[in-house]
Image 1 (tube, rainbow, N blue to C red):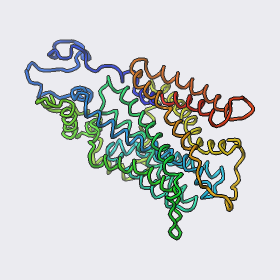
Image 2 (image 1 turned 90 degrees about the horizontal axis):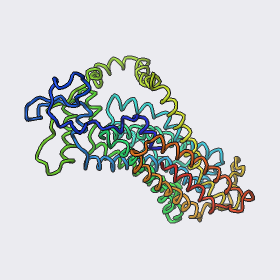
Image 3 (image 1 turned 60 degrees about the vertical axis):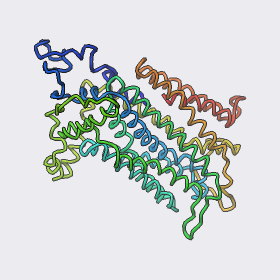
Length: 472
């Protein structure tokens, strides 16, 4: 999916901002064309009196340790979202027995977090544009982790479902905002590869969720019974899955800086300059020079963002707040962005439908196949579990899930290395083609009698093909 984020920036995301000759001292008389000069400098030997635009400041800050730290922190947050989304798929094989769920109930439970993401996605995005990326990330990650952990205490299906929806509202904020926040620290020449690297942490979250399920859910000694509280091992797994989100929220709240682009658009020049100085210091360790600029060029047209007077006027009525919040959507469908926006929306919808539609049900399908039945058998009615036990859990279900998650690794590495070489369009088209073909292979090997090569073990080959290319 990482190509979609790069395509959203267009081809300019990979164009160098500074030409090789940008170090030459020029004046406004050097060229009659305004666009020919990247930096307009005076003949003063010192550059400390310059004012830089956002893109120029990002380039001057350099590339190095600060971007590595950002990648680790933002990557951990991205992985925490993956863990929270995918944890439901791994608890279904045992939770369906403990909570006596039908296939319809499991379908609702699987869809619950995505419903929350739909409700929270745009709300958090709007707040991120008004109050700041860092603050919204800290709050949305906290919402995700808190409600995810509290869900482990729910003894009824409907309460568990409600808490998962509330957790999804938090996930809907952190996923889009984390990519916006991260990309606004990146220089243009590195942006495509770094966004691809950040997307790779989603695979790490897959592995973490699958590995935790493999280690925790089969352990029967984790069962605790205290009056009304029947705390099975899968509930411990739910609590563990909330830890990455809570730790990420704490890190963003206490350590991470605000996006310099947001600060500049909000007219907070001194704070933005402090962030660029922090980046420069980390990227030029051992260099005694300071960030080579005395100030930043604040865009006049966006200078009212963050102005409390603007927020007061908007708060006078819900209608005006909603109208102001929906205004940015219309910009996506204004020429020349209309065709690209519609195409990306369709592509992203199809990828999400195929990826999550298969992944969220895989552990349950594995269990049905391991039991010797058809993965697509009709189980819409709730079954009686009075004389049955959910334990011992067959660990093969989680082992196969872990292997499937690990199959993302080749595609992720391939994307990082080739994103800025061949471009996102070619990688996206190729991965979608191979993934779609492998889906038919999954169908063939899951149904005995259609092919001699059948059964749950052989089906791993088809699924690994799908997720290996899905990692692109």
